[in-house]
Length: 303
Image (cartoon, rainbow, N blue to C red; front, side):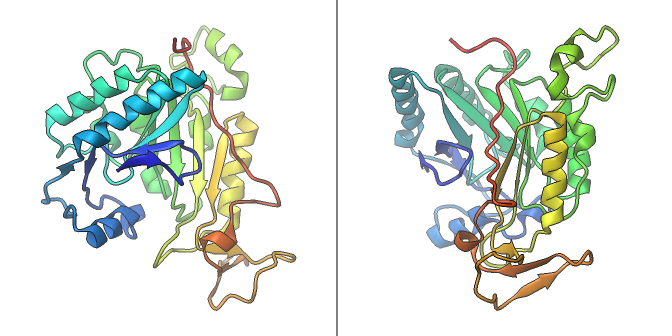
């Protein structure tokens, strides 16, 4: 429920509760739903009750916080991998308890990733203000339609970090407009000018971070390498940190890749070819390089 994690962009995973249901095409092969079916601990679906995790699990972030304090470091906590933190089916008391826990663990950066951006505003704590300094707000967008939805909600909410997770990436999407201020056109790379722009109404509404990755597990859908390159190029041009998490089950079939002939090959209309080689073999490099960008939170440093 809460432990060190295999997720490359986090140090720990914490699940305050369990259970969820599908809201978009990115949910079609949900690993959390598969876990739920195997474990039998919680039912999945819009009418299924969510289950709060054990009290012992809720104590773990306190331990992680104390350890981070002792080591003089900050740790990133992904909340929640087996649920949605902004699920409106959660009892209000559970959300209150979570916000209290977050406010008590100032040496942890909490990464709250949701597929329900329309619920964020109503479920924030009363003292949110310009955002908790140790909370990073993120939304998932696997296609252009979802990006249009989540971008509108995410840009409207102040936060120390606002990020986008394009995983599983299912089509070519244009994130460039979300990397630049809609009013003055500045990007994160020229933030000093951005903040001084006297006509700018939205000085901090650009995205701070982008995660991109392919799908893994049974039924995984292939991802076109050109979709990844477009996102990474846009982020680098705008000075936005980008984290390429994984190819997933399918990897590009390029000269020198070193794969055995895959049993399954997919060719995209642009001629790009990928083969199903498995997540481990596919890896997470693009043109021999890994992309491990991590953002610096905006605002006052956390004491």
